[in-house]
Length: 351
Length: 98
Image (cartoon, chains in turn green, orange):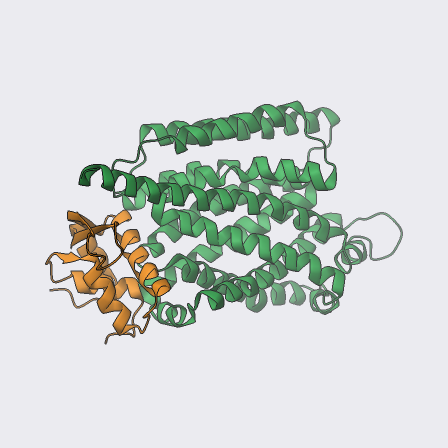
């Protein structure tokens, strides 16, 4: 084999590795919707919702909306906490604490991008996702964010000239059409049932925008930082936002969040939150690891298969039966991914 | 100072002399500086180089098969040089780029 062919093979291997990471991300992200759904029914979050929604006990649930938002904030904060624990274990095993300290110190050129990414990824995307789960349901939340690769791809192209081939665009578009088929199918069923929940849809939109913007910003930081370290700094930022700013702000607004936060240290809650932290933490590691190898556009496009994975896992574990629109949309998602993966990798650079 | 900055910063710094460098030579140098003298450290540093290439900051100007096993027998060795974009990112990263 001559050098040119060997180079091509090496490049192909690199791209395949990137696609593999993105696929891991999709699977783990899909699994995450299981603990993400169950946690609402686990003590103290179930009692928390009822006590805030219906403080007089009259059964009128007049504060239902506020209750869902406050519970979503506390769940998101705990999700961030268990994710950072999972990431610290990951970095410890890889022996990357030294690199983490070195990267953290480089605030201006480097870690500021991860802290910026944490604003869009945390209080915007993840909270939005939990709001969508709380108001509408996990199936909806999972597919609502399916538009995020369009936002991520466009921003990565505008901000730092990431090249996205025609074929990759085609794949991304097919995945999105698949996502929309799932999404619109659900929405039509809801409209016909007459129970549209607007705040839930706002949550879904927050998730799509937040994850798209986060990916593009993170791509910039990942130019000069290791992905394992970058993602950990991003979650360090998110934990600071939740536990130093937002949770205390909710407490100051008069909601007993700290009381419930302490009550969350019970075995069942720790187990479900731990499961959420592991799946979400490692899904995020895989997401960030795929970006430098295949680009933000492709990484997000393949990562988008999480929508399909979530529907499958929710069917298997929570017996939520998918509608036919979900099956058609899911098939389109898979097709779109194959369009992207089958692309010839001729260039060594993504820019 | 060597060893005090993130590894990708150091890699860009080493390529900032605008000369061509073989990946195996750079990997060995960084392994020593960061005390990462095992196969995992070697592969991890080489992967950082690959990510810099993928990000368009370095480009390969020459390749050869590692016949003698100076790095990994049978694998490709690459001679890389910094790109214009690499120079911009290097100066963003506060390197003393001349």
